[in-house]
Image 1 (tube, rainbow over the protein chains, first blue to last red):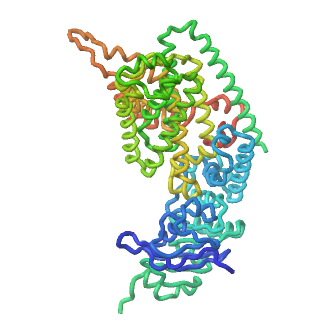
Image 2: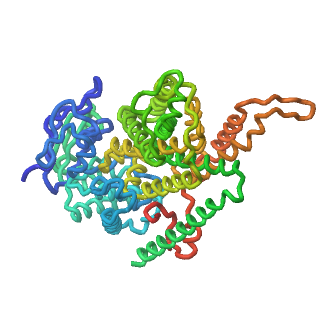
Length: 256
Length: 363
């Protein structure tokens, strides 16, 4: 099967610092791939390049057969990539429902005058957006909070809402940046079930960064390890766990 | 569905209350000439014009969350447009004594409404052109660039003598404006802004205010939406300038200095950044206070002390007011909330289990 996402020799320099060096990966449709590595290994930089926040210094990024290197973020999102952030970035003062509905905006057909004066076409679109947003919230168990201000939700629900908002852009590929960060064991367990559930329900391909080994080992089918910008290992969870290079990167070199 | 039904009923009641309020308000305006003295009518007119301008300014600073400091530029453009287009040809010939007015302007005289719309369009075009370079910047830098643009406009108004008549300004601008014009535009602006804010575009603007990076990550074209908001603000600021020119009857470059921006800034901060009704209330309070505080600028005798009149004392009072607001009431009178009929509607059709009713259920 053809790869949904393909990175070829992607390199990112910040001044003199090479954050990511010659990174190659292919992710096929339906896969759940993990990206791990110590702090500062360049994991989030990879996500930022895929979503167009940074333009890579060298290399190409292909998504669904199209070269998206250097394209604008909003274009890339419209092609079918969505992401969440390491530190939750919700629209804190908007309601839960409005947070999800912002994701439909880029597909809106009515122009601003039709929207302001509520033309029949716009009203139809708005109605459909509300229905779809509520449908999504109900699938993700957030419907009871729809009129709450997003910033007031408990932490675990904020994570869910951020994922819901990402799903609302109708992605084919979902990038999750440390979804389990700051969660307690129970919340983490729920999150793992949640990630599996959305993958099956929405037919997604998921690429995730995670520090929590339990999550990575528990749900990823394939893991890539990054250290100081360089890929040092790839394979199924069991193999990664035993890989001496990975152990070294995380725990430091064993003393002779 | 029960929720839909309640929302439907709430909406109908809200429309009914709005219509009743508007009808009563315009009834009041139609009788205002009979029982209010011209002085108070002038205050009403000025506060309506300030309301229009403050709401437009609030769209950029409050809803979109971009700290822009140049509304005086668009107001000046609008004011000069209306003045030059509505003044009769002979009056223009008499007024321009240093240098004659340049060609197309010296021979046209338009009715008020087309001139006012043109003022808005020119304001919108200027806003769009200013937005292209300046939205490459954010925060303080955007503020400085737009502040500079406002100053450039004042300098241009003083020096393009063959268009603006320089420091002499323009006098005898026909006074078409009455309470219907000013409040008509104030209400139109209000409803436009309110509907805009509760539309999908408004959600996009607010998303940009809340978190630009996240807004981009849900596919919103940040640059396009910033330009859109600024262009709309430019239109209404231009119209506001046009109304002001016709209301005052005389304009000169000094009127559109940075102090104009400062006044509008006081109004929108006082009313609450992001609240359009807040801007309207604050505009009225501001205009009323500036009139009432005239007495602090006149000479006073306090006991044995004689204090000579100090021009500008009013601004000191406003600055103090602003300092106290910032210390004790940071979000302004209304915060980001709007004055609405919800306190009545909630009694008749309550939304059960709803903690905080946001824009999804408004309008």
